Image 1 (cartoon, rainbow, N blue to C red):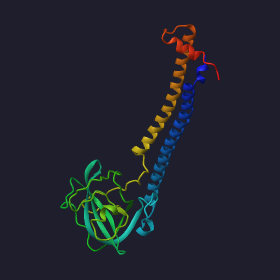
Image 2: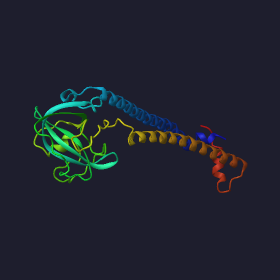
Image 3: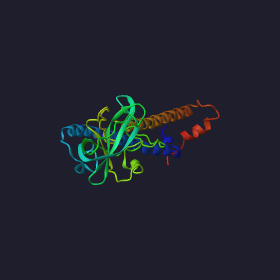
Image 4: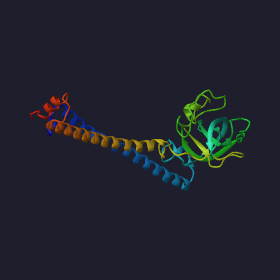
Length: 268
């Protein structure tokens, strides 16, 4: 009754099943490992954030380049404030507003973007308080340059003069005439009239949409593996019933010859 399993058609089906199931299991396991890695990154980022709060502020030069360990660390740097820009479309406490970004020109010649605070509403230079004059020393949480698509950063262009969509050297290089650090800081205490902007988690270190996509893909691949097994048994059961009906002569006349030939196929 099961001789049909040795026909070329069923050889193809069996080979496909034997390849498809390990492949689905492998892909599901890989997606699960990616989710677990993101969970570990989230745990490390949480632990690092707590450690950063206990760490004393360090000179900026000691914390560069910014990585997952130094991101969020309190950095201190001295210089003179220069050009001021606004960063529109930023939310804080579920309210829409803008950052006040001022470039701090350090003694080394480079400028460090400093987010001095957040204000509600549309970006308006008249609302932004002027930066302090003279030599200043600032302390704030160190951040890596933003990339479009992360932390709500928009990639839109065509902004009015004096505004930027992202806080990064690549975005600011065309707006100033001096070199920039590939990093920025948000003051631990905003200047008068503004709210402090909290430090954001390092990129790809949180339980974001990508992490839960990995978890969803894990389930999908294991479902695919189960579906392959289900379809194989369903096809097998239908073929067995078909062969049994052929032996008993219960098939319609037009299908009986073909079914009898399949049931009587000799084993090679």
